[in-house]
Length: 441
Image (cartoon, rainbow, N blue to C red; front, side, top):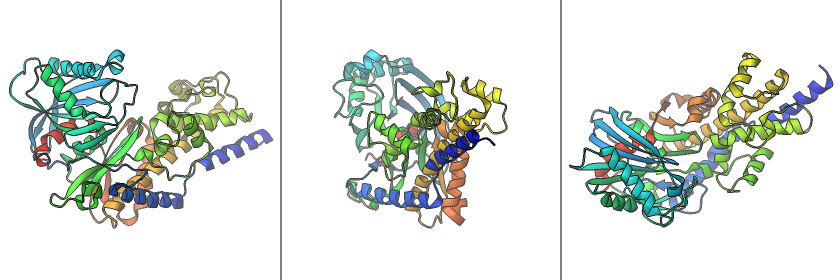
């Protein structure tokens, strides 16, 4: 082995070590996460907002036909779902449309009138009777009740005026009335993570955690009301879903690439965990580590996109992290990363694996922390409802997540299972609307 190859391998091992997390590291993450959860539940300053969702999980006995409105970004979607009352449900029909940029950045009244007009078109022949609607609004909201929430700030390119600080449910209800849809009652407001938990829990009685691993990341879980000091530690009905907002967790060991990503972001010092585990950042995190090898002359990248910011998308990591044993030409075709030698591609693949594995281990530690918070001895059965492209499309991520959780949870890890749950932002919020009578009286 010549000196250049030795140097390259040595530098690669150093970078891999920067992304390595030992079991001791993960134990420290669990402990810190517990501390932040407890502090957040009291309403004191914490990395974790621990937001009350003002709903329990459904019983599985809810039945009827319900509407769901999903606004998670530039698209809006309307769904009509039927719940059988025995834990089964189906989407009867759905409609999706893009929100014009002029409305995203115009007046709030015009935006909500556009939303109401789309619902009117969706219902067209059904203009009588009464419909309950679940509203998925995946923007930062300070929720006041199951049917009330104030927009804290717009994200995802929205700047519509007259909405920040206002109750988005009231704004939608007024727009529905203006459109002649006063027979629609907004029965629930939720985000996609809470919806994912509800969608799974409708047919699975052990489901008590929901998690999203996609472009962004978040989790929620069932907490005893007596532990939620920020809503007065209410007694009576026993549990409430808590929206953790865990992307802001910061008690994590960071390396030089994490710090660079954070410094160059539009929100330095915030959403630290999200920048280490979510699909929005993993591709660029890997690219920056690869670029370091290029900058010191250890690998050649030719005219590859890896040389420029944004030149490696998280979706490409899947082909790279599973590259072992595959033909060079097949990997190049799947990733579109031309201009790299076969030898250097193995280095790129190794770094991609290290980035994805670390993301999965951090995710596993935080999920384990949530389970241990609910059930320290893991004596009960728990099901985690999971959605998101990172979990679904990256086998290295999902496999490492499952294996790490088994290690962290120990002998009772068999009491915990992960269940892929699609479309929580649609059918999940319809389920919450169906169960809303228990929380709105």
